Length: 247
Image (cartoon, rainbow, N blue to C red; front, side):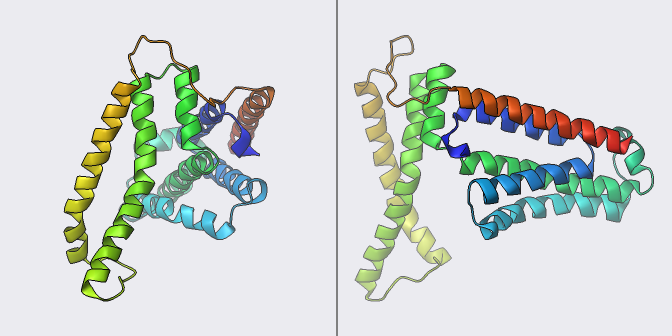
C-alpha cells in the first residue's frame, strides 16, 4: 500500500512526523509513533517482525546513550525539562532519559518506514520532475544507486578469483588482510565506473537549461493527497491527545 504512493508526499509526511517527535517531549507520544511505525511495516507492508525489531536495535543503542547519561549523571538539560512540563517533575532525570531514548527509536522507525516503502530511483525521478532537481545531480544519484550493488558483486568476484588462485573456498567473513588486499582492485573498478558515468552524462547533454524528458516519473494522484491529509490529521490528533493527557 505505502509502496504505491508518490515519494514526495510520503517524504513530507514522514518529515512532519520526525519534526513532531523532536518537538513533543513526551514518552507517550514517542511510543505512539513507534507503535504506528511497527503497525505499518508489519500489518500493512507485511514485513517480518524480526526485521522490524532488528531495525530498532541500532537506534535503541543510540538512544541508550541519552538514557544512561540522563539517569546516571542526573543532570538533565534545563530547557528539556521546561519543555517537558509537569510530566518530568516527579522523576526529571528518568523521564527526560526515557523520552530521549524513545525519541531516537521513533525517528529511526519513521525513517525506516520511508526507506522500506520507497524506491530510490522513483524518489530521484520525482525530485527531478516535481522539484526541478538539476539533471546532472539526478543522473549522478542514479549512477550511485546502480554502483552500490555492483560494488558488492565485484567484491564477491574478486574474492572468488583469489580463492581459486589459492585453491580453497572463501570464508564467510573477510579478514583485515583480505579486506586490505581487495581495496586496490575495488578502487580501480570504482574509478572506471566513475569515468564511464561522466562520459554518459556528457553524451546525454545534461545542460542545466536544456529541456528534459524523464521516463517513468511518478505522478501525484488523488490517493497521495488522501494519504497526506490522513497522515497530517492523525499526527495532529495524536499531538492534541498527548497534550490533553499531560495537562
